[in-house]
Image 1 (cartoon, rainbow, N blue to C red):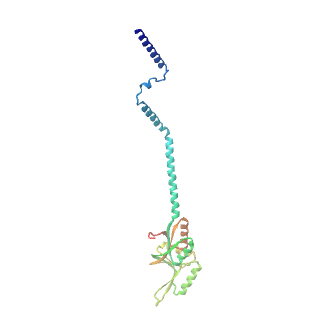
Image 2: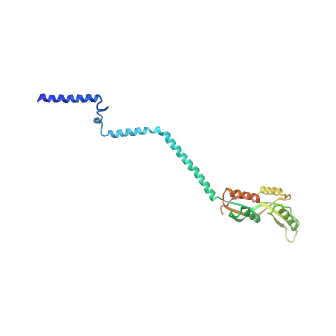
Length: 248
């Protein structure tokens, strides 16, 4: 029996030596003991290593990230341009409110007609202080003043009126009024326009007074209508084209 036990031990040693030789020669892979030596936490550690390797790839994709960032910036810029365009469309749709004034009653009627029936015009009066009076020299009789009126109409100057001075029981004079202005510069420009129409005897006097003048209010004014209002203002001699008062 002792010889038989020794024989079995020798056989086991021979088998183990053969397995070690085979392992050394690579028969069981490069790391034959890896599965025997690793701890139960090794799979988690390996998984974390793989994640770190994935994170290290991020710098290589930075150009794409920057490209995406630029694309987002471009999108925001495009939205900004679109927003401005939308604002302009809304402004064009709603328009602004403008007032044109300093008219006599006749001048306000002509301005309304010049704008056409498709433009909604609100007429109103506003009292304002004027100072500079454009007029013809005073005439001793009403007949003389009427002749001056007829001459002015032949020259296409129609926004005029005859003003009498003096008490009825005293010597009166009659003056053809051509316009009242609160700024001398405007009065001088109007005087130059009259001289261009052949009215040579018109003059400017300093005559402060409060007068009631006619104004026209137009709402929802776009750029095209604003240009029409400015053209009418210059042609008919209105003093101002301005934004509507807050109370309106």
